[in-house]
Every structure is written in structure tokens, then in C-alpha cells.
Picture 1 (tube, rainbow, N blue to C red):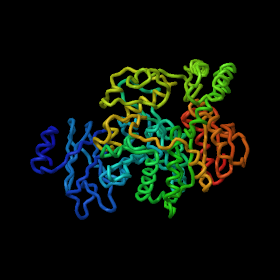
Picture 2 (picture 1 turned 90 degrees about the vertical axis):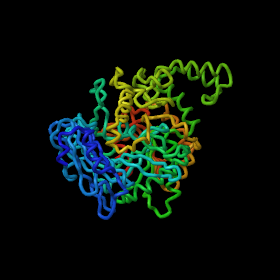
Picture 3 (picture 1 turned 135 degrees about the horizontal axis):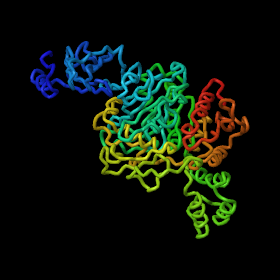
Picture 4 (picture 1 turned 180 degrees about the vertical axis):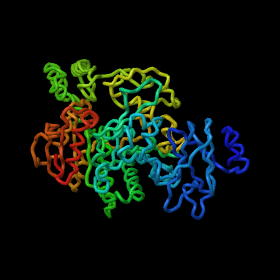
Length: 571
């Protein structure tokens, strides 16, 4: 291939294709540096992934490293050898051994290779999405991939898997489903319980968002799968549109299948204690999924020990009814407003008002609290003007981002826009996540299948999802009475799902108290309060926490989950 040196990319392509018409040429940019190809039509005998093939014990492919200041190099995959073509004025490109470069993790399908962010790569390549704010190698392994959970319509669930930084062979495995419904696994990875954060304070208009390592992550003490579920969430997709028509119970079934098949490819984690977790709307999804696993696990292949739900939607009457005594107790509404509403509405503050007096009393409360951030009553309510396609006009600091049907990639959050990103507004980070995940080279790095997902949104509206479960109290009763452990917790400054409402539905279980209300501690300070009930149910508040308690109180929540999943099992 020496005759190709010095030729333009197009000239080099013509030369190669003239000699080898079926050859496939792949661009490897300096940002992602991952070369991927799969040619099943020419995989024979002992061919390996280094030749674009796969066998029963796949080898790691080599990597192409540009030299002489080149932005990228080209590699042609052929059966017996690889031809490396220089670009951007480079005089040569270097083929790196897999052992000395960034390894890949083998995902379920042979043609899907997903990167692990390991080794010295991120620190040595500041142009990479993970590089600028990272000093040295990442202290954890990150794997991405797909698992097919329904063959008829081709439903593929996408995941991010991070091994525990402590003892991955023995630490618990948590499968985390973000709320919404429809919030991506990146929602939890970036903003809730994961080890990466977007650098809002250091963001410069027009540049690529930077990430930094965050130590108070649940991956310090547990292995975590961040799952894009239900289908249509994040990078999960269906090859046929009918595959998007799924219910909450159907999602539980698909998540069970996901885990069963994931363990086939990761048998080393099959014996780890397994927990299902989530927050917000996952108060519905998590118990449904856990019960699905409990009901379809005759041989104990899934080592399910329990589940955890934070500020979870559970029972509408309790959840909604808890907001009014919460607002009153927190000093957001006066005695007169609260007692007037109780009198006018005859104690029913949840149902549609039946009288004008009741409607007026509730309207007065709404007006008095309209500028309160419901996700965390002590944090500012931010008007995020750059979310031009979101409704209503005033955007609360939430993840309820609505995608228009005619949106095209890049139309909602143009790079040339000039948004003000206030550091004290959590929505600023949500905005940057859209930029990050919609970047073409990030998608290549993550192994996203081309054409599978258009515009990525942190929390899109899943119009196809059927809400066939509206109350999960029976699921909690079923699971706990069968011996599964449950942790139910509330950030105590959340107005969306209040600790008042959560305690109300827990009381409907009728469980006796085993250990009465007491403080639990983090760093020798009260971090909240807890009550232990019969049937392995633990309830806890997180002092100062909001709707996503780990987002606002990360260190305390890390200690909470470490204690609860420990052999002692108590906060």
C-alpha cells in the first residue's frame, strides 16, 4: 500500500476499491479512535475481529493512532491484512496493539463492539469527550451495548455498565431504571448515582461539553447497569414501529429478558446480589419489574435480593394528597390557606373540585406556590429559555423535555445558540447532555447503531407507552411478604413525591414497626431518618434531598446504599 501515501482520501479510496471492490473503508477520528467493522460474509475458519470477523473467543481489534499531527487515519479491513491510510497531511499512521491501547468490551451480538474507557487513553487525548477534565486514566470500567429482548419486532435495549470500584466480584449488582417514564440511563449516570458529571461551570459556548469524574457515585460500592428502558428511551429502539407499542408490564417482562441474556454474556456477575432500583416514575416500573423477575425465576438464575425506590410514584391518592400537608408543614402555605382548602373541599384535595369554593381555595394555593421549584423547594426555579420546543413556556428544573414530531437532529439545541447556563440551575446540565449525546463521534464511541435513533433526548415523552399499572402498593406487599428486601426513600424537600405521601401509602400495608423512627448518619451527622418495618421493608428520608435525592445529597445517599446493601443491612 505504499503507493497510497500522499494521495488524497478520495484518490486512495478509488485505488483500493478498484483493486478490491468489496473492501470497506472506515474512518477513525482522533476523538473516538475506535475502529469497528463486521463482515460476516468473509468470516471463515480462524478469522477474528481483527479482520472484521468474530469467533467463539473474540480477539480485541487493533487501533489506528494518527501521527504527524493528523486528525485521523483510515483503515481498510481485508481478510488477511489491514491497510492504513494517512490523512490530513500525515506521512504515516501507526497500528497499535490492543493490549497497549483502549480495550473494547464484547457485547451480546458479534457485530456490536462497545468501548471501555480504560487505560491512559482519556488523559492522552484531550479532544475526546471524556478527556478534557480527566487527569489520568478513569478509575472505573464502562461498557455499553445492546441486548435484544423481543425478536418479532426487533426490540433492542441499550445499556451502560460500570463495574464497582471496590470489589466487582462480590459487590451487589444494581439494575437502574430512570424515571420519566422515558428518561435515559444517562440521566442517572450523569445526574443521579453515576461517576461522571457534565462541567456546567466550565462550559464555553460553541465548544464540546466536558465531563469530570465524580467520586460520590454508587459505583464506588456496587456494579451498576444504567438501562435505557422502556423501549424508545435513550438509545433503545425497535427495528419495526410495532415494537414501540409496549406497556409497563410488558416493559417489566423485557427488562427480565434483558437481564437473563445479559448474564449469559456476563456469567461472572450472575452470583452477585441483584437489586432493581430507580426513582420518580420508576416507583411504578421498579416494583413491576421486580415482581416479574420473582415470578419467572424458578431455578434461581437471577439472584434477586430486593429493590429500592426513591421518591417514587406509587399511589396517586397518597402521592397527590401528601403535597398539601407537606406545603403547610414546610411553611409554603399559611394555616388559613390550608384549613380553608380542607373546609371548602371537605377534606378531599385530590379529586376534581366539586364546588366553586373548593376550586378557588386550590387556586389560591397554586398561586402562592407558583414560583417554588417542585423538584427541590430550596433550589431556584429556572426559566430555561433555550428549550424553545418545550412546553409550558416556564420550564421547571425537571427532565420533562417534549420532542416535536418534525424535529431534526440539531434543530432544538443549535451549537451556535447563546444560552446562559446558570450554575445553580440543574437544567443547565440537562441541556449539555443533549449536546453530548447527539454528537456523531460520541455515538460512534458508544457503539450506537447508525439510523437506530434520531434526536436523542434526556427524557422524551413516550407516546407509545401504555400505562397499565397505576398503583404499585400491591406489588410492594407481594414482594416483601415473599422475602425480598425493599428500601423506600424520600428526599425530604421534594414537592412532587413528598415524604408525607410516601409514608401514607406505607401505612396502608399495615406492617408492624420493627425499629421505630430514628436518625441515620453519614459522616457522623444525621443524614435523614429511618423506620424499619416487618417483611424487610426499610423507609428512610434524606435530609435536604430533592426529587432525585442522590443528585442533591450524593455523599449521604452513597452511604445510605452502602449501609443498606451491606451484610448488616441497616442504615
